Length: 453
Image (cartoon, rainbow, N blue to C red; front, side):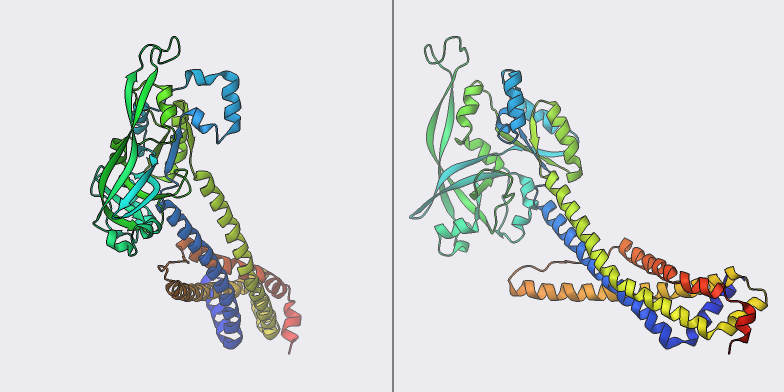
């Protein structure tokens, strides 16, 4: 039997029992709709989380430490360093190292992590808080999406961005701070060069000394943000004030590691406790870490957390797919029932086909064609229904978010591979369900079939 004739005959048979075949197709559509809706929700949540985390700036950034600073994170490195006395030959994290890291492929920028304590005065009010330096790339962080005001006009502008909670401690109406001047009072370190005789230990030709000077700097409030950018990775305390990284380097504030840095190097050498390396893409982070570690430094990134997140969503999608497939399994029983009933109703037709020369393979292919057609139509219908269900869920979720004064989000996504996979899965399940009816129809004895009334 030709394929064209077989498809035409299958279509005619399906049209004869419209109600029963339509209900069976609808059952397949409902099963596929539940599968698509659940998987679209899982994919949408994964994309939402990935995009949010990517925009946070955490996953495309590598923190670089000299090995002594990093030993607090890895006790194994501490023991190894103590056993090999590697601290005697440690490479300093200085300007030369910074320029070398900047030359690595796919590096967007390299900047020091600067965070220090300052007294902030506005009018008659005075508060102490942490001040953090922000690089120009921080502007892309999601923390600045709903910022009141604007970002820094230049990398060394004498401007600040204030975190909302801290702004409330300075003014009853935080928005009144925009464009106003506040005063930063901080401690500035000044290197004094090599110490004189008796200032250092015997044989210390490069003993460094420094002084701490109280400074004041008037800066303009450029913007106000709700949350701290990069919270959870950078810095050891929450910041209330943020200044451009260029200005932060000019201020030379006294930080937690200032004494250690000056004691380890000469007074004229600039060293860093931590350098932040921003990559062009999170996929480049691992290669950058390996290259930097070969230079003699230690690194840390949040990519391990990203890999764990991907594993979590993979497991979530698996479970959502399993639960969504349960309805499709029920629909497959409807296919079996429909085709078995078709065999009972068409015994004479099958007997005539075999008497005219149709083989068992032809009869089997005919029933497979009918099952596959119902699966394909049910799959298309299910994708449309699943898309509509996802749209409705997203609409309802955004209404709830609006009532909570939160921005709208897209929590579902129907990629092309999900559409193709759902239709293909529907056809495959339908063909499997048609195995028994097709085999039973092919085994009919034509003589007995022609005698059937």
